Length: 340
Image (cartoon, rainbow, N blue to C red; front, side, top):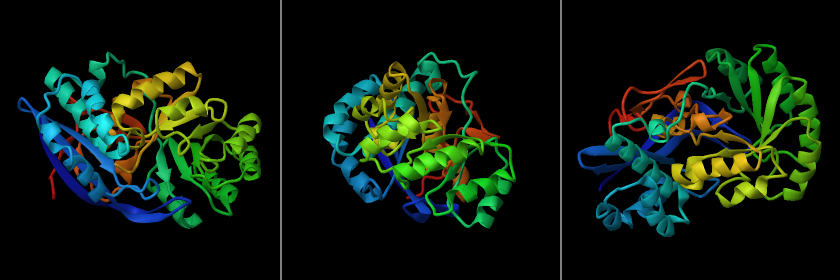
């Protein structure tokens, strides 16, 4: 296969703030794999919480360029198994390669990726739209700027319930809240009671990822379902989350790509948990890949491209929460201008 790497730094429309940090730019890395005249695209994002930067990601992939360029793709799963021992400590880099391999494989079959899996897209869940932490006035303005059927509200402030009460005055849309590890046991239980009365569907990662005993208490007493994010990074975390969370949020970059994500979905289903996919503020390259997992899912948060001031690719489109696939094989992603 041929390998090309494209680093990007994309600006957000608005400063993006969660409980831990704020940012105005999202650095990204796109990997392209080519074989037999076809090309597949994969994407990964830098992330301070997981100590990943684009230079680190490029270095990790470049270290295995000879192996990759001497590899002949048969199935994406076999390629992932080849690369995993070499990149198991860098799932973000592994994700970009695995995603590109899936796109390439489906194109070589002349099919959309979900067609390769024999999936029916008629009952796909809709994506939410994320409202980051900001002043109340700005959060209301963001909500009005993008009318949407489902909103994911970032929380983790001293005024969380007030935020939801104010936003609820402006829309009847479904609310989901994400505290990004900011709450204690007591705060989570108290907030869950209040949020349930305000039409919130579930709470994502209310407490720090290492507070398992606290999560067990919250799981047993919470008025709302709880979805793991920072507590569910890799395949080995799925079983651990059972009995502590009602569902898991799978992010391809964190777990190492589509190949392990599908296994995580199947395991979560066997354990009776709901399944969601999340966004790391990817461009349309990454979200186009995530879209092909939708028939497996209960919820999805894949609004990354909508938060960016500019995109680097075409592919899926989002209309009032509904995902519309590109009319081309693979994931449907196509770079607009591969800026170096």
